[in-house]
Amino acid sequence: MTTETSQTEIAVTAATPLERRWRCSQNEILIERLAENEFAVFSASYWDSYLMNAIDVAVLRFLMQRAGQASGEGELGKMVAAEVELAYDATFQNYIAEALSQMALVGLIDQESPC
Image (tube, rainbow, N blue to C red):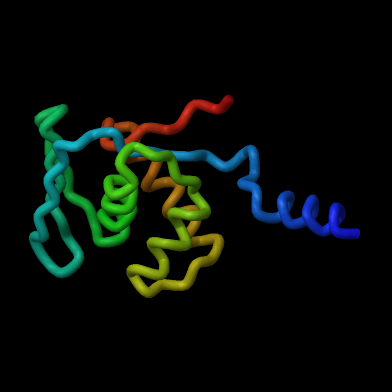
């Protein structure tokens, strides 16, 4: 009985294999608030800058604080939703997934390669 409970708990707490994981390995990203919900983000590695909203910056800061460790989209979505005081639902998670893809496209973050 104990073995079954342990296996069930492990299955429930393990990340889904299809969940994309992300990391920020850059240490030269500067974030400057321009307005209440608008930020300038400068990447010294690419010598480029971007405008982002508070949600996007919260995602980027969370990944930067993880110092190169990968985080799953679900974990990121829940942490950011709590920080910006918004409901964590499918719409919010879809937004997070799109924001992560766009940040990867410009080189601010990287997607972890699947094993």
